[in-house]
Length: 449
Image (spheres, rainbow, N blue to C red):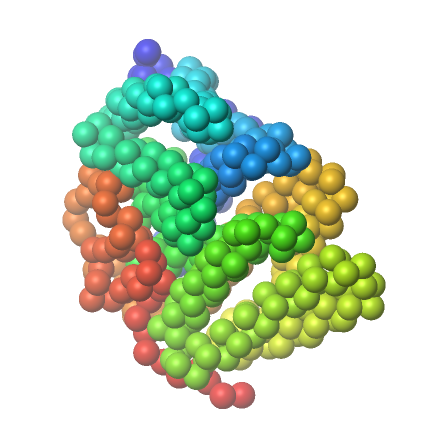
């Protein structure tokens, strides 16, 4: 295809990736000497991290629903398809209509190959399973070349291919483990798949901002500050996704309920480690107690729904209301007023409403509405990630200085095995990932109010 022609086509109607000219420039000069999470480059990375990790999450869940023959399979597949359309719009906004169409075809095909694998597994057809895997091998090579060409070889096909193989292995591994009844391994693989796609977003966004510096006001996608934002976006959105599936498993009485609840608990541990690394053990413990408590309130709501106990449902909702007030106050105190309790409470109410709505619609068998809410809940968590990381960086700017940045953008492609260091392996002196990514090392005690 004619990439030079394609690069000139940037639809103004789609603003996910390309910021409005001048939107950032006014404050750019002032911010050059001060780290910030709010740049066009950081926004790009967050947007890609959101959509790519959501793809992994929805793909795993859709394959699982297919294996079960679940009534919500079509709705789950529909949500995955909507995610593909959003990714296509993102690619189109950068590289033009022709490249967007090519991406859509390759990406949609690879989802189809996973579906073929699910069907073959259900039919005990080993030949068909191998054919699906062979097709995924072909996809791996085609998509690697597509991205190498699109980025002007800023991403290398060989490295990309390794990363794509990791993605394939994670999704197939999660599915095979689920079918075999090894639910803990299935959810471990799902978490790996979600984390890996944040590495993809890191590499891809770094290549795009290097390729089109003017479109992103000469800001970088990969900085210490954007690393923190990406880390929190990853863990908070994963919380929303795992919470929803755990609630579904709870009301269904699914055999994998304990494993899904354990994965959600591991996510909580990672979030608590991130808070501890910024504000110290006391604050980390306080965070974990409140965060675990609100998860427990959702579980109580599920149990009350199953028991058809309206009073218990009301009690769970009241407990969630109290959590909003307590957690908002905690964050306002921790950030020394950089985050306001009132605004935080409103955002937390959105989170509660989205998860409860997704669950209620699921129990009422309105699966399309349920997965609409699932997607809303997943996307919403990138907003608090931006706000929290912004407050942390403003509070501790010296820990996010650009001096730690490398002079050359690493051609890490789609991650390969790098996801184990996700997402900030090259600034260990300032930031240390604790479990696929957990935050920044800033040993400070929370200011006692």
